[in-house]
Length: 227
Ligand SMILES: N[C@@H](CCC(=O)N[C@@H](CS)C(=O)NCC(=O)O)C(=O)O
Image 1 (cartoon, rainbow, N blue to C red):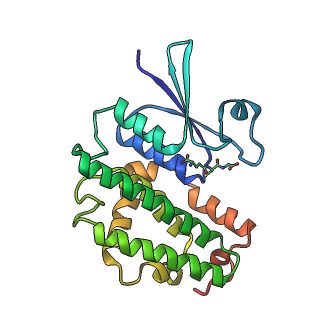
Image 2: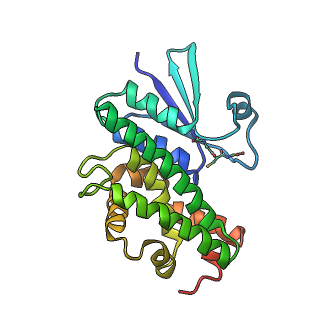
């Protein structure tokens, strides 16, 4: 019997987006349940060891239910279980390299999140320069083509897409601070942002919701940043 999948989500969570993108790439049907992370439901706390989203609830028949947590293991499960499309290179050496870049991209995501949440210019500039440093390293590993591995969309792209999506709340001068002089990275960002799985991984009001979230936190990027 095919698995029944439920993705426990939050609308702004970049880790949830990873899982959604992988499921969408493989055209796997799944249900989404969005929860309020400021008021976590009891049922969620009972099944989430870390209290974090995403969770993937995998039901095989009526009785047999497994709750997976942590975005990377969830993505690996989906990759291993549903083989119609492969998002990891087959070759072990290349696969290991991709996994390393996924970890690297996760660190870049921390910089990007810190950057957009920064309450002041100094914090913004500091985090933007940390992020830019990592993007320069990624640029040196990029293969010519639309995605990290050239024409092939892979797990490294899955991890990068939610980072690039944060740029939707940056005005052009803020974007320039990070991306100026990095045309290949900018082209990579454009390719990812137009990819159907990436677009469908969030709701249509994602950018506005992120903007409102940041306004609520008085973040520099959405308040004082010069146009
Ligand atoms: N390492 C985790 C991180 C997940 C995570 O940080 N999720 C955030 C939302 S983006 C969360 O659920 N935070 C709630 C909390 O920490 O209480 C993963 O890769 O799944």
